Each structure stands twice: as C-alpha cells, then as structure tokens.
Length: 307
Image 1 (tube, one colour):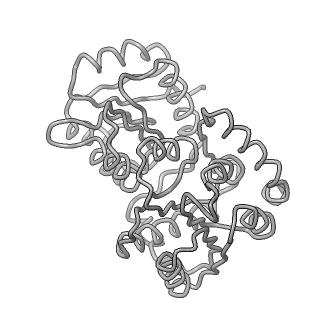
Image 2: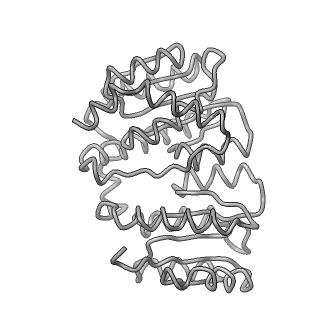
C-alpha cells in the first residue's frame, strides 16, 4: 500500500491500547484513545481508515461509538472488539454501526492482523465518502429495485410486499434454496430478505456465497433464531446488512428495508470494481465445501456481473 493506513483503537484499558499499538505500529499509523468522546472528536478532524472499538466501556458502549462514528465518518471501516458473547451488542453494532468485522477478546494475533489488512485495503479502495445529509436525500428511493424474499412467513411477506408497493419495487419469491439459485441466475437482484432456514434447509451458505460473488447485493436476515456465534459468523463470513429478530417489529423492519434500499441505489451508481466486500472464509470445512459448490451453481450470475 502506498498510502499509510491510519487505525484508531479505542479501549478504556490503557494496557490493551499499549499492546495493540506495540503489535501494529510498524505496519500502520496507530492512534489510540481511552475516551470514546475524544475518539469521536478526532474523527471530525482527522482521517481515520479503520476504527477498532472495545464494546464494554464506561459512558458509551462500542456499538454506540460505532453508530456515532458512522454518522461522522461513514468511509471509516468499523470493527467491534469484545470479550463478551453479547447478542444485543452484536445486533446493535451491525444494525446501527454498520460494522465490518466482529472480533472477540482475547484476540487472536493472526486473525486481528488479517482483519486489519483487509480493512485497510478496502478503505483505500472505497468510493468518496457520502455525507449523512446526502445519504438522507435517497432515504426514500424512487428507482425500482428487485427484492428477493426467502421466507414463507406471512408476516414477513406482508411487510416486504407493502414496502415494495410503496416504493415501486419488484418483489420476487423463492420456495427453496435451489429455487433461489435459479432466480439469482436469471434476475438482477438488489436486496435479499431471508430467514436462516427455508423449506428445512439452511440459507447461511447461500448468504456467504453471495457475499463473494455479488458485492452489490445487500442481505437482510429476519429470523427467530438467536445464536450469538451464528450471528457473528454471518457478520464476518456473509457481511449481512441487517439482522432483524422475529417476531417482527414493523417499525424496525421498515427502517432496515429503507436503509438497505438507499444503500442499494448508492451501490448501483458505483463502478463494480470499486464495490468490494471482503468476507472471511467459513471455518467449518463442510460449509466451505457448500459455498464452493454454490459458487459453481451461480455461474450465470457471475457472467452477468462481469459483462
């Protein structure tokens, strides 16, 4: 990398900040802050490529910090670091902070180094930042989007159908993973709304495959399944856009759909080479094989995107 990556670590424990600075200062320009408010002030005046925040801090959680950082510096890649398997924190960081990765403490040195390298490379390739005020202009998009629903829940269908009618979007449905593959090969899909199971089959491998082959596609997961480790895998391995629990809260669901639609329109107007997602490979060998198989089945989709 020709430009030196600037990484800001935020943690209320000075010992951890010293350890992180010592580990990464040779490769990056490392900044540290023990006070989340000071970290936000720095984001207003300094360029930061990657922000890494602890979750448990007095006065402000890491999820709250990342949500505020997204408004101040949306181009900064955000990573949550925590030693707690906290589902609510992970959901808040994803839905409100748009996190790039979720890492656990004590961190694995190689995993941390790999994650920071990916985040730095992506930060340099990102499109020019969009100010929050500009993003708000497209909060209610008028262009037609293609929405694919992988859920047979009547309540989910009703909310998504209402959203599509109100926004002039096109709703497509798939009854199984195999059917979804057919639709994805045949139709340009902008948004994917999916439960984690469809017709008795897990949709997670498909979500992880699409993160690799279709960077413009945004996935919203709507499910009653509350497994923290599964969610963390979806954040890191599928880079889902939103995670929404069932039973559905319509206001929260509508907000997630509107945010996804606004982002989809922004991505549609970017050159494909600048829209990059860097999911981590699945750790489970059987799931890696499944993702590899699905990549082969999405050949027509890949041809369409490359053309």
